[in-house]
Image 1 (cartoon, rainbow, N blue to C red):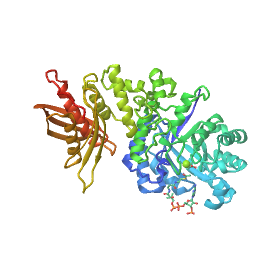
Image 2: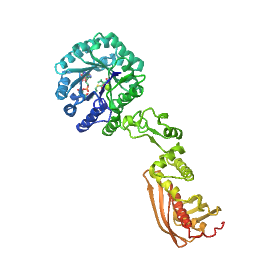
Image 3: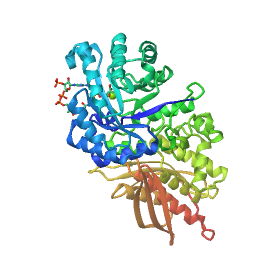
Image 4: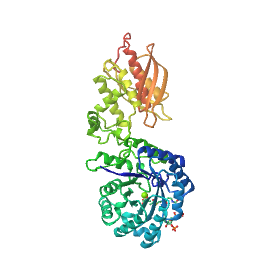
Length: 514
Ligand SMILES: CC(=O)SCCNC(=O)CCNC(=O)[C@H](O)C(C)(C)COP(=O)(O)OP(=O)(O)OC[C@H]1O[C@@H](n2cnc3c(N)ncnc32)[C@H](O)[C@@H]1OP(=O)(O)O
Ligand SMILES: CC(C)C(=O)C(=O)O
Ligand SMILES: [Mg+2]
């Protein structure tokens, strides 16, 4: 199996992401994690670009022991000198010189003739060779360059001392077939190409950076360049973690391997995301929050029976603790039951069905069901006897206005199963509900305490009401939860009364039909 070298440029091209600015300590932290991740080469920065960048590259060069540390330089003596000043302390210093080779860049940006570009590139590589043993030359915008010209400059910079030739798809323009053909062409048309390693550097403007990189590997690239989480200039660079995992999972078609420690992926991704402020999209391959999450019932059922039904990568492989079966609107009873058990509940089939129905109704109005929500819901289900006769709320409506008298209209069934309906008023909405319930129940009820809490945060959080009632002289707590505070208040009241009647020694009154 061919070994592919990994050149990480999170600290250079990744930092070129608009809005990202890492300080020295942050860069060192990322560099150390990249070392743990097992990259072969890391581009620590562009030393000539600023004093702080110079200091960061120098500090990383002094710190990193198990990877080659590289710095970027234009084809300019002052950039090369500056890079040497920073990188000379590295265990294996490496210089990355670039010069554009496409007609667009040579004419409009560099304003140099093709001959001048070749001469400058060769002179600067030869100049750098006096200091650096290892020199990577990048033909910037290679994918939009003339192939014969690219072959010519490549042959000459190799003669001048380059040890790695990088063919960047600088603007993310190429396709896998074209990029593969570019590497094949270079292998077939540059006489001294066997003296160097060929490197691929792809950008994601058309969403093909990873596919293009893999096409390059299949056609002779032995080094790949990319960043963690795919951050980088514009739409970003190829994501190293995606390439590494693709090569591993599809090893049957890609017989290549890297030295990356795959179970360091999550940690590396989290660190880069945190320090750069570039949030990883939830649906990002390999490391997105949803990459190992399943919400739909059929998928969750499959996952519970055998994870290979819906997962091709194990979470452990990339350093994620376990898959997540997210409980939501699309979940089924298998996943619900499994989650209920993991929370420590053992429910009878009847209670489980009741809890599942309550859960499904909750998902109609709440997007994400948290464990706190479930705890509340399950505790309610578990502590209310389904068999004992009880009052049950059928429906209610409250009219409230700052100039009206609050009025509640409530329909409920009494413990004999009779349907009751009534309207009543109060000084506030809760009082209107409680007055109406009391009248419907024909019991002597006093409210002794009322408290309301939110379960979790967010506008759609559940409301949980705790009350204490004195029912016919007997004091009893009650609890109710719902998304609406008034509904939670009604449930708490009814729950408290029902609990009184669940007491073995207390006899219910006769319940009259209203
Ligand atoms: C494809 C890539 O990712 S390349 C790397 C891009 N990264 C960066 O640019 C980040 C760091 N850059 C910087 O801090 C600044 O651009 C600096 C310090 C490097 C240069 O700053 P300035 O001297 O103000 O120049 P400015 O950025 O405006 O223009 C770039 C100059 O470099 C020249 N240039 C561009 N590429 C190269 C190259 N590979 N070799 C030599 N010269 C180059 C341009 O033609 C232009 O020259 P000009 O001033 O004669 O017109
Ligand atoms: C400096 C070069 C390699 C680069 O980042 C690019 O061409 O995208
Ligand atoms: Mg780039």
